[in-house]
Length: 85
Image (cartoon, rainbow, N blue to C red):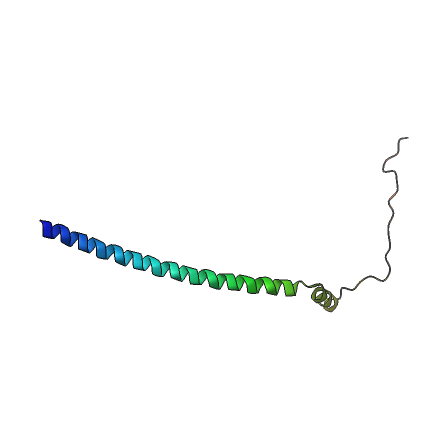
């Protein structure tokens, strides 16, 4: 009976070691993935900043036919909206 109990404890100990080792490998894999995604995020953010720079926006707008206006015309609205008879 004691031998069976000790055998069960040994098997249980081995099983816990395997589970712990598997969990450790999974954590390491997730940490690598997190680092890779953080690098990708930094790259995408820097690309976004470069893409949205004012000079690039002006160049892109010019190539699409958008230019700064030469003359501005302001339209004045009448001061009163409604009049009493």
